[in-house]
Length: 341
Ligand SMILES: *Cc1c(COP(=O)(O)O)cnc(C)c1O
Ligand code: SF4
Image (tube, rainbow, N blue to C red; front, side):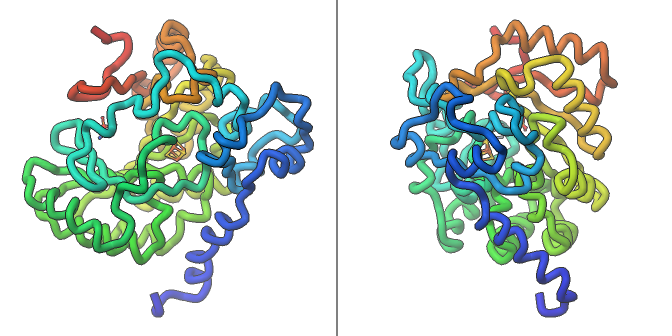
């Protein structure tokens, strides 16, 4: 990194400072937004918050409406008392990750592509997260521990794509990320390196010149799948970061989750798709909520999802309509709704 101009080196450390200053308590978040606790129906218990604390960077908070308890960004990160409820059908491993685990850090459900759990860390804690109970402590942490999953990928010539996931793979610092990417790049049968990340949305300062140059230097084709649920997320520094990824030559796709009270209207979905297209991003998937414990209050009935989706097809160009999908354990691909057996 010594040859880089100073300004670029500085920006490389910026995101870590932004992360360190993220908001980590309900009280601090409410105060920052000019809200009070009695505008809500109660928050998650201490026990729930110890397991999955509130976490949200300033940049994301800046895009919330001051004084609005129903803000769609706020509602993705506020831990409501509903999280403590035990609801039939909502379980800890809703998508069958553990039965699809091929080895340390490696999940394979579908032909030709494997998912690498690179870290348990995220820059934001989305309260509906399907991996909120994932046993990350069992997965590789130090670089040396990646040698086992990397060897498995190297041995299996049917694998053409590695998906860096987590947690959020861009939480790795540049050094670790580069080591991992270069090792994967050497595996001749790999064609693509997919990065599933929410950091361009919640911590846009992570999209640095150094990151872009690293990915541009690879033999494999990088593909970004970002995770934005609402058009209000895609403004300011986030919009700049997202646009920059596309203009740096990477395909950028978006996946969203259909969330009650957040984006469960035709208008919200239409706005989201239009904002994404405006920034050069193709809407890829709209996920029906994975039924993970503590997330039942986010669930939108499939019938409403189908109505919204039908209307989107009438309002948007074909490439602006995400596929409405559900992840059903044991299937060979994501399941498009309404094609459920
Ligand atoms: C969702 C998922 C993928 C990616 O599926 P695509 O349809 O290729 O986007 C890959 N592996 C696992 C384990 C997944 O859950
Ligand atoms: S960024 Fe993704 S993995 Fe991280 S908390 Fe949100 S949904 Fe979960």
